[in-house]
Amino acid sequence: MINQHDIIETVKMIGEHHLDVRTITMGISLLDCVSPSKEETAKRVYEKVVRNANDLVATGEKIAKMYGIPIVNKRVSVTPVSLVGSSSGGYLEIARALDKAAKEIGIDFIGGYSALVQKGATKQENDFLDTIPEALATTEKVCSSVNLASTRAGINMDVCGKVGRLIKETAYLTRDRESIGCAKFVAFANAVEDNPFMAGAFHGVGEADKVINVGVSGPGVVKTALERIGDADLGTVCETIKKTAFKVTRVGQLVAQKASEMLNANFGIVDLSLAPTPVVGDSVAHILEEIGLEQVGACGTTACLALLNDAVKKGGIMASSHVGGLSGAFIPVSEDIGMINAVNSGALSLNKLEAMTAVCSVGLDMIAIPGDTSAEVISALIADEAAIGVVNNKTTAVRVIPAYGKKVGDSVEFGGLLGQAPIMDISTVSPARFINRGGRIAAPVHANKN
Image 1 (tube, rainbow, N blue to C red):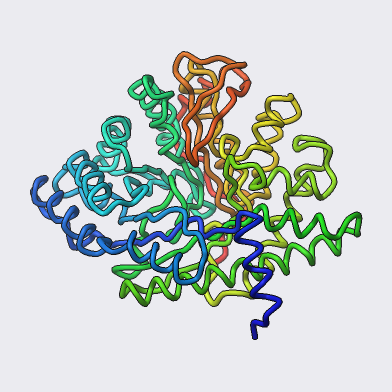
Image 2: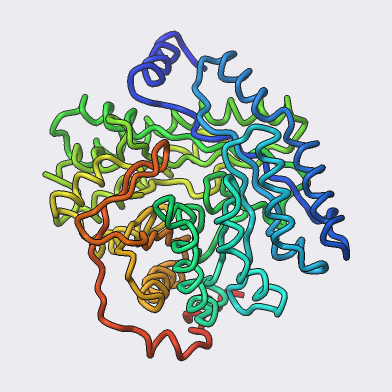
């Protein structure tokens, strides 16, 4: 039962500590939009997205007003476009139809310009991959992802090598906008089908026709709860995070159920992810510092993050009938003021961030690097991160921005939720021979579980 104290505490979480529903994301299947014609497929895609999600923004605003809970983003994810457009080849036409639909219904982003090529890629999928830079450069709201590795399949190094080149091309094509196209692209290992967060969201083929997934975030709430316990031992720290995560997830469950009912959609999952913003008081880095680090990047950072991620998951699982997505803690650089400060002070390096990705929710997220970084280095960075995901049977990802014309010491400014990213140093020692071998890195032995 929820008592008066719980209600008052939740109101404080919202008003003082930046608790919000970060996103309501409607997943829409586009499998019934497939046709041999580019124009007809694009037309069907546009019409289905608008028809199903036309009330998404208004519904989110109604729920926010009804419960007094801020709902920051309203988004849509769709069936991977590499599948939808394979019969017609009209991938770019679909991208433009998605962008037009997103603008029509007033959502923030639409995800699913995606391909699942972890074991191999067809000719059609390779053709699709080649369109990603142009799609991201010529649309505003379309987000793209490629799943190029999994624990069961290993790592598709042919695609990994290609993705490095695609990221470089995207950076160049959007060079007049701080290479922002790269901020709308993610390379995955073990991508999940019910992720509500951009840029990596897509509507999996195992999902129903129309699904609501909700992402809840509350780094400020967790930090405030830890401030109250002072120098208590780590067992108390874990219990405090678990109890807080439980309360936060209950908010997400309430919103997800109501949104599903109002939009006549299936209730998918609640994703409890401590997803930061550039706003002061909404930082995952500051939680880790409250646990006891002088600054993120210090020795002990990975251990603190592992503790946080596990406690968040344990608390959330008890609070919702369907917890999923990427639940845990995100560690994007540009979107977290504490991470930005740690990079600028020299406390946090790319190597330390990579170690942290072994225990966080996703991986190397919103990392800006010098614009002259080679495609092979970017591909190798992605391969390293994919290896962490494959071996540890977890989702990992890379969203990296080789900012055109920028060098270490500079920064890029995206504004809004994407924030500001300092250009981080990255090793330029060449992995080109390794990347150019191509082929596939086999799945680890523990993948053989059948």
